[in-house]
Length: 275
Image 1 (cartoon, rainbow, N blue to C red):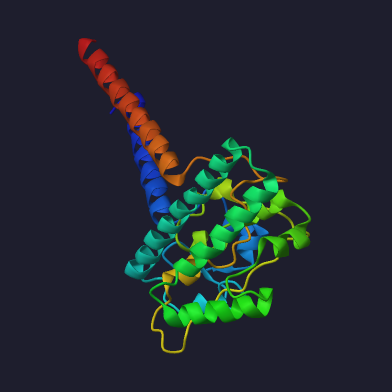
Image 2: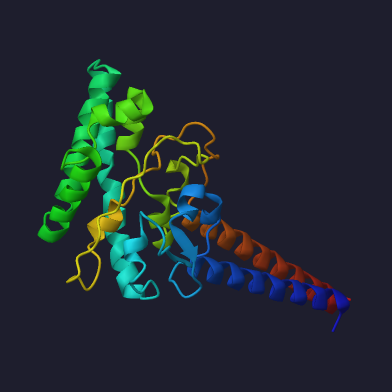
């Protein structure tokens, strides 16, 4: 066989191997951005090769430790939790719309902050509508921490941060560690405020699951320690494409390279026959 044809065949095999590796890597839950590079996420999770997405809750985490006892290698369990967390992320859009409407009406930053902060507390309470034990635990935790069973008030967070803009940020916050264990870290990467340890935002304690529970209520994980901002400021990294988009691009590149390799082989073969 001609050397040129051998080289093109070897190239074709290499392309297929790279394509297979890329797809399998993403299918296994590897991220473009390493969650462990995010100090806040790294405090809540550990690397776990057996977990569906390569990460599990850190047993020592104040935020997610209560969920470490569950089986994060169980694909059906993780899929259910992921679906509910996606719904939670979607629910945040209500706050975006509320903020946009109030801005259009000429409302002040303080008015907006008070409104979205109170609504966020209501959403947390509503998330436990089918879990009375969890709701009772949440209210007790809020009462002990904030002196208010529905959660931190706008005044509380204003005193902590000294800024009504920061109160709005707090209202839009989500937990990056929870996203990492559910395969969503890359998808929502551009929403995280990756701050250093001097960030003054105070974490909230995740409500403990009851002794009678056999699996976690998704609302607890969904709302665990919202200390990441959806409106990033400061040392936020550049926005990245979603993992699915990257896979699509790589597939197109691989298919194009494969097509070129085939065309080259055919042309060389035809040239040989003519000679």
